[in-house]
Image (cartoon, rainbow, N blue to C red; front, side):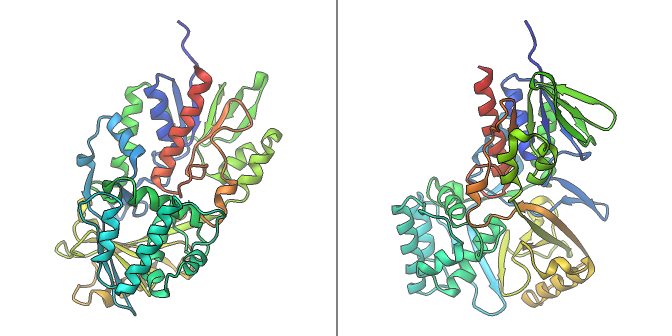
Length: 439
């Protein structure tokens, strides 16, 4: 029987890996090309000062159903990779009193309402306003007629400055990596709906037991190798050309791969660079050109091993930092990851100045802690796309105007923000589209 020709996937981030896994599971041969030496894209393990850590702190939740499904498909149990914790959101501030929200083990969405009722740090009137908004959202199925910036929508729905600053803004930054002033209300509401109203365990936090590379990229690599997938690392695609009969010639450093079908699993800018000479894709090019990027900065502070937040994560408001995450769950006791979401003046500081500023801010919140033994700054300048209002109007579909070219990436029209789950879902949706053409 004739063996089908491999589908070439350019890019081995989480979207490209998810597509490769799904294709391999469906017995479709794959060739995977990645410019870096390791797989994982913007969710990978790096080495800093001879210590392996993540290229930025990543947070997964129970609603990441496709990621968990693929891990199970590859033979991995959730409990081996994650510590599942019920939702606990707490805040430390430099100006206002903090708050604490813990969701009980009861059915969704009642668990969210009850959690708000017993939350500390908000008055009864403030709790009532949040709960009333959530009830109204459920009545309209978390959908608004026209997208707008989240901040203006919250103000129009009777959310006070304190509620926005201590509750909605931290959630928005953690979910969208975009400030509420410009963030897409519709994308935020979609995640809110899936996380807090569908199943109680969807709102759980999944804290990694290992570095990010061991959670998905390494299991994916092992699975794909066992499936016979050809993986080319350290190979940057120099040119992508359409040749005879609509086939593609993929030019690498010292060889050219000829293929019938291709998946572009690269960020919007790289996708535009590879395809801008293909006039059939003019509409796609216009969409890709509209995407903006948003950074995430992580300051890893290493303290003596006994130092701990006393919980997995704490939100910060009123200063430079947004979140503190205790890395004890990832076998790094004493390491605190301080996260700054999005752009800002901090991006202009030297790493040394930013490290000093972050550690001083932590010291004001935890004055009994000693000085850190070591501090490392990781700036992922292209961490996510900027999830601004109106973003869904120009997010492309997986299928392109070419019958043999598809896209996979968190920026495609998944309805989700630039998260690991968004990337995985895009890769899976991409393969579903491809399989229809092969049947």
